[in-house]
Length: 170
Image (tube, rainbow, N blue to C red; front, top):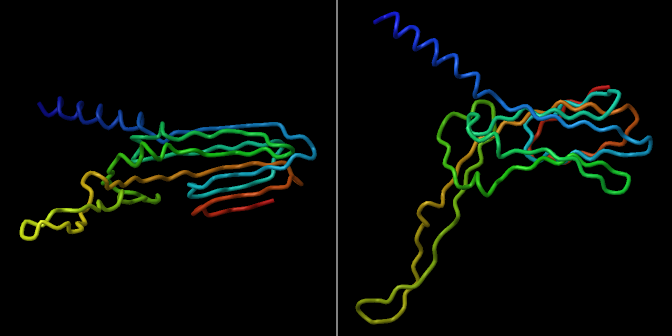
């Protein structure tokens, strides 16, 4: 019996790496006069280094790897600028209420607000305003998205992030 429990325990712990972080990579060759715009709003860490071409690698953990598929990374060209844009399906994330640990990540919490209405008074028959918290409207999710970016030396670079820490090196 003990051997069976040991084997089952090893098997179950061996399945844990199957739920590992998601790695997403985008690469592009830049024209000599082309600039780069990194639109990485939800980033946790952004490490930028000089390299031969543009390469962006994202390490994604959303809700303890349960919803990593709600993340995408896209390249968009506008004029002489190449944009790298991260996207989260926030509408779907706002339907979750993740209560697990948020180890080193960023937790987003919110409520869909208050429900304001009117109720008829039983005594006078007049209308009275009511204020109720909307049930089922609370959400919570945890994200940790780390980036490794290489950009050719001398390339103009713009960056947009809400809470990302930047590590910029030559």
